[in-house]
Length: 381
Ligand code: ATP
Image (cartoon, rainbow, N blue to C red; front, side):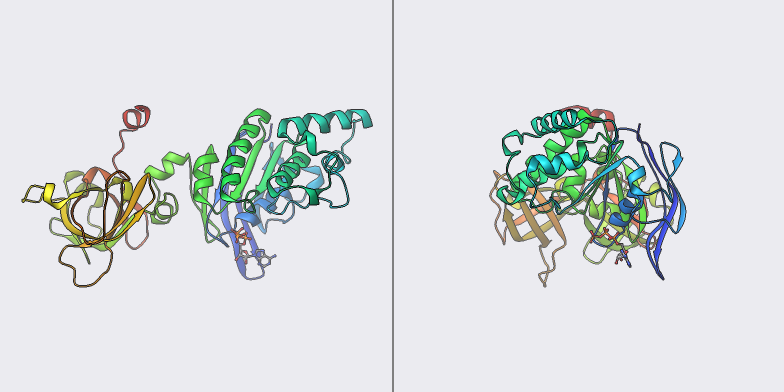
């Protein structure tokens, strides 16, 4: 058990609105990632679930029980923060055991046994008699986790728990945390501003911006079918390309590019005039100009490479118009790392209508997302 429901929750600090009218249902055993840029209200939302802040409006329930005014100790939750907050004068054993001190029903021997069990789960058995100062950052974070899970809570709340770790350890801890959460089967709300963490860890992701919930969905749903331009730009690395423009007679007329619509794009856009065309860098086809037929198709464009970032497995290629007089990049594309690309190269770029997203330039709402034959495209590996 451990279902969390936020029902039209708003939190104000004086006149400032930190969280605005958020309704969110986290299912029992689910791993939900709360993601968004700095200051969007992630921590405040988590702190309300924990009982460290009280909602200004709306209702919060855990397992159907009203929580707004219940103190943290009575919510059966455990929290893990970015700073490990271990007691420096206590051994690791004492630190982990501390998580159990307030629990009823454990004899001292049972507590010791439980600490050993959790230490084995986390691979920190050999560290139990050391002090926190003698541990690396990753080891300290494991101990902080141990202290949280030792009580076997209904709900885990984690606020950027991996932020202090280096990239390699972070990736390792990511998968360890996921495995642990699956084994323990505990409802988890995990706050991060890192979209990679959100994509790789969450059963579902809730995207916040400016205190408002933008979209809740499974990682691939957010990637392929973003509800609006904000989500489209936030999820995915490198970021989706956006081109601003207007409706023209046969499609889209942007500052840097004209793009004819096919029937499906036409139907999706209707009579909206102010448009933003979106396409993911990895959905753009780039080939050398000399390999191309001389006649360009209607969705093909002659471009010049301005910057080529080589990552080994892939290149991130910055592109501008072949006849551009300034250096303004029009698009970024991801290409196969085995193909050498250099600044100044002439290329032909294809923007397939099936991969095009279109957003209302005024509201930011998605008018059309890339056509995804979900079953076929996502199951054929
Ligand atoms: P970050 O990723 O930088 O931690 P966040 O998404 O977690 O950001 P919050 O910490 O929830 O954002 O803050 C949301 C907004 O509420 C911010 O504008 C912040 O300045 C404001 N805020 C948070 N706590 C308080 C407080 N105690 N008093 C006044 N304003 C606050």
